[in-house]
Image (cartoon, one colour):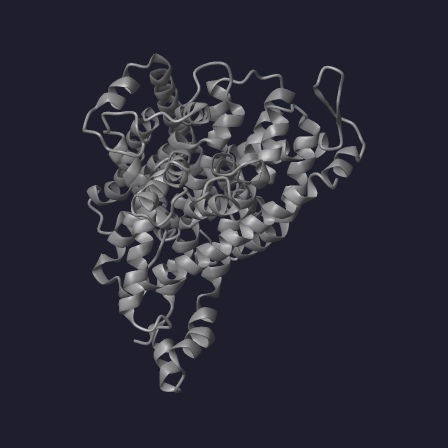
Length: 282
Length: 274
């Protein structure tokens, strides 16, 4: 047995599993998106663009735009909140670095549904925050917090911020602190040094974090379902409806394909970096 | 050291506030799981009422057992297959390894809802009725990639020398893998398995799309409970699930140390190098 063949045998079980149960099913989604529903409500393969015409109908386009907008807002908030935290742990954490990182990860091992549900308890009209505000006399009437875009985006930030902080931490930790000193020696203000030295040096971590937050945020349906209402529905909610309540699998498939097209650029970008073995990617 | 955040003091304050933001919701879940009353606003008194309710609810207990079974089977199969894949990808320098190196990453960055729908479609296409097994198959698909990445990180730090030495001493190539390479990888394999257990046990979206008529896994049950209205039992279930997941991950971090090697578990899990 040649050397090459020997090692290939190790690849085949896992490789073929992923190919048959991940890649092939993805192709099925693509195929069904050109199909239609028969008289019994079952999806039938076909070749028409009707589903795509429906996706780009005036009813659904706002949902697509909303999903991307919410996901982008989530990415930006995660970056603004996550960068200082990652910077602090990497630069000033000292011997507590690993303890601080471990503490950061703990909340993410509470089930995502339960965590989002906790936010419902906090933000509801009769929730903890409103009760406090009324008791302390800040407001007479409860403030509407749940069923707003802010609540949905807040839920997404809370759900995915860890995927931003970890790669940021990795890239900041790897950065050579002496380059920051050099910036200072050249009479750069702290802000100039940050913009011209620190940010470029940690660019790989920033990009990886943005991609890792954006991808799951676009497809999320839990946050919008629990913290939002019909006005804040995202494409994930629409897709989920097609496979359960509405039972229109071909249309749900077309929505999925369109969503994946939105994500494809980001995914390809990420895979290219990952295949070059850049450390921050995972 | 210069920092753009003016002074480390402010940076520390900001970081502290973010930790508060992260911990307040889960603290509420834990605290209210011990509430003696149904209220989610006022702590009336301490009791194990909601835990008793959970352990006396036969459907919830079925769901718990289902979730544990799914996570265990997923852990065993994906650890074996994923470790083999990692070894193959690092050792083989063929076209095969190049392609699968990239393909293996795709399940990790695909939104879960897409993986869920894809799985649902292939099962219905093949006429496979949804059951605990369809959930397990769906979970294994993404778990393989996790195992491969964790094990590959460790493998990268082990050179070919040990295996070559074993072969010089008369071991066959297969024996050198089984007797030399796998024992050296053992901490990473165990860590990856425990990580996958925690991820599978916690998974909602994939399970949601691939669950059938039999007992639904715990997260799917929680979903319908939340949608039917507020119940403090959810806090108890959430707290218990957190204990299970964190124990699995803590073991994943600690076990490499118990193997008597000096490197930290964090490093094994993240594949980080110093």
